[in-house]
Length: 140
Image 1 (spheres, rainbow, N blue to C red):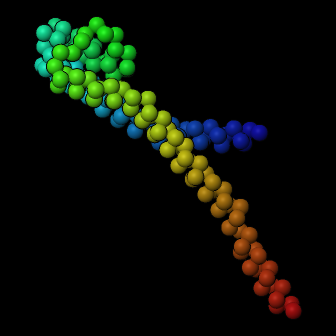
Image 2 (image 1 turned 90 degrees about the vertical axis):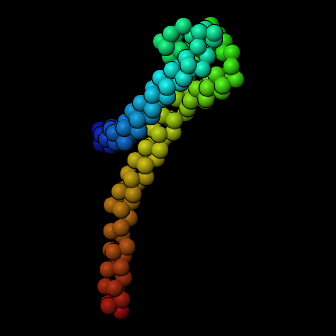
């Protein structure tokens, strides 16, 4: 029982190490795109759209990205609505992309583990079988 938990903990550590860099890179990209979209919406909509400062536009980008969207700011221009649509799609990817990354790492780790166990249990048998067959046929 202890051996099984050691194998599973090693598997979890491998999955974490394999997916950690990818998730950090993904989150850095999302953070950068959030800041860029916040500043972009500030210049597109301006004070007429209700964005009195860059920080309020970044706040809008974060609430839109997290699909909260309080409705305290309504976009006035079509280009602003296009930016909002892109930010909303990015918000859905925040949920989906890390899950896909982790599932991919689980699949890789499990396939490596199964390859290792198959090579240990299956590969000696053909050699032994071949040896026994040649020894048996020599006796006949």
